[in-house]
Image 1: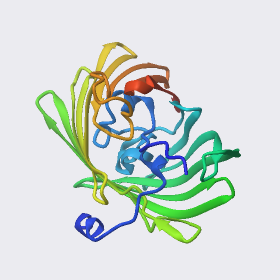
Image 2: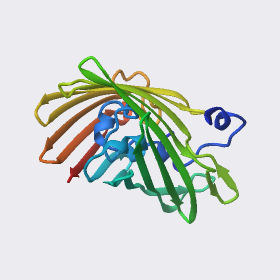
Image 3: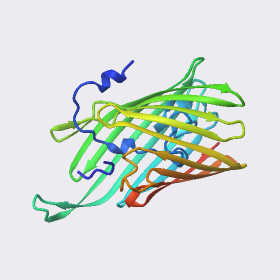
Image 4: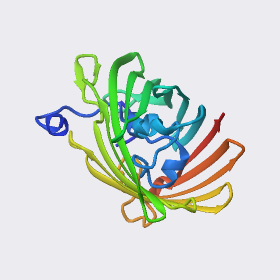
Length: 299
């Protein structure tokens, strides 16, 4: 198979585990968060919270629809579509992730061409976020499907999250935590592989003037290890935002370790009359850079 990306925490981390599969679940969505180094677990406050931290849905006051597109290299495209709808009890949302790896050249054991085959992955998520007196809570249930050549695997996974914000000086401190991809894994033929379980912890500060700073740590307790990210958002003008960040995430920073810009992220956001257009670029060493676009509307 072609790999695009080379209370419960202790229980899930313990014991021996097989290799991880469904690595597309570990690809971030939304140009705003990715432009800040993926440090978005605490800061997430829009429809993309379905991926980062479902508790971030809890304070949405308007309906929101968003579509994201990413060019990841090697003819691989990553798309995300989401809709969030506030109700009197909670904010509900549905999101669809689709990864298309294009046509892959097949080879036999001797390295001879055997014809090409297709590979794609998808996840359909249904999420809810709710405010409480102590913290905001969220949960997401995902249906997973992975297809390569004539082999297909299906399964379910769950994400959970919480957020808490409180005033500090002239701004707000926000803390967030999320546990992503809880589930039994996907079974291809006779082998079942683990999902990319991730425990993310983040902190952010929102300035009264509209700027923001955020940091995040993410642990893969099944062997992926610890990764981190940090970034910021600067409100340059009404409706204009500049973003800068850095991520150590190995799945996103392929290429030579000697490339000083590897893992650097840049972003731009434009907002007007409920519409937003966001762009993010990320340096990927010898592979050049990846580009993300997001268009969203609140109504």
